Image (cartoon, rainbow, N blue to C red; front, side):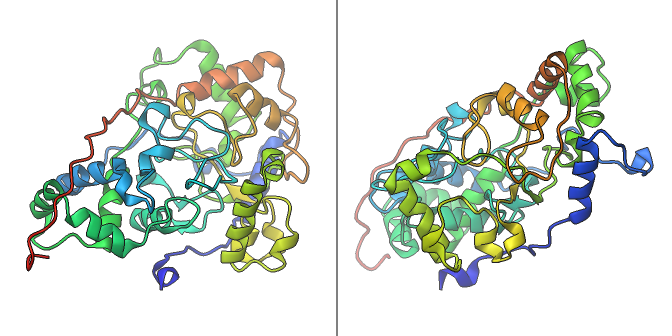
Length: 372
C-alpha cells in the first residue's frame, strides 16, 4: 500500500540541457541570446508556511520515537549543526544498517524540483519525502500506524496538534507536518544574494572573477542555475565509486536491497551505484544523479552523492579534468588561480548557519480509556 502514495515525476531527462553543459564545459558558447541563458538567482521572498504546522513539525523532526527502535530521529542524519546533513561521506542509516549514499542537506527543500539523489520523488511533495524516510527499512524503519499511536500518548503534542486542527494525530498528516517544517528551512543572508541585488562590494574581487568563470569558461551555470543552483535534472559526470560501499558488506546489502525494492532487473549482480537506472530501468540512465544544489556548501562537506570528494577544491579539480569515467563533460582547462577563484565564488552562496534547537522530547502518558 505504501508505494501507492508515492508521487513520482516523469523521468524525461533534458538532452538539450545536457548538450548545453557539454558545450559550455568545452569552452564553446551556444548560439542563444544572452537573455535566455540560465543564471543563478538570489533566494526569492516566499510566503511563510503554516506556523502551527511548522512548530509541531519541529518537535517531530527531533523526536526519536518516530523511528522503529526509538533510536534515531530525522535530525540524526540532518543535523542543524552540520548544515542539516550528517557530516559523513556515507550516511549511517537505521541501526544495524549502514547506507550507501551521502545524506544531503534538507535546506531549501521548498525550491527543489526533485528529492533524493536518483531524483525519484517530486520536489513539490515534501510530505512524501518524509514518509519515505520514516517508513523505509534502511532509514528509520517505522510503521506509520505505530508512529501515530506513540505520538498520541504525548499530551504536549496533542495540544500542539489541536492548535492546527481539531482531530487526533494522524500518521499521513504527521508526514506533511514535518514536510512543512523542512520547507521553512532556507539559506539566509548569503553574500551572493546581496551582490545579485546590487551590492557590488558584497563579494570579493576574486569571487567576482569566479562568478564570471562560473557563467563563462567553466560553464557551471548550464546545470547549476536558479535560486539554489540546481537545474533539477539528472546527469552522468563519472563520480568515482566510494570504495567503502563494497568494502563494507552491510552497505553492500543496503544498496542491493534498494535495487530489489525498486524492481531493478538482475540486481544481485550489481556492484556499482547505478543511480537513476534503478528507478527508470532505462540503461541510458545508468550512473545519472540529480544536480546537487550549491547553497550552504560551506557547511555540507563531504560532497557528491557518495561523499567521495572531501573539499570544494577537490570538487572543482574533478570538474576541471572533465569529470570521471563515463562523464559527458569535457575538461575545463582552468588554471590553479581560476580554480581558486571558482571556489571563492561558491562559498559566497552560503548564508548564516540555520540553527534550530532541539525542543526536547516530552514524556509520554497513557491516554484515558475511551479518549483514543
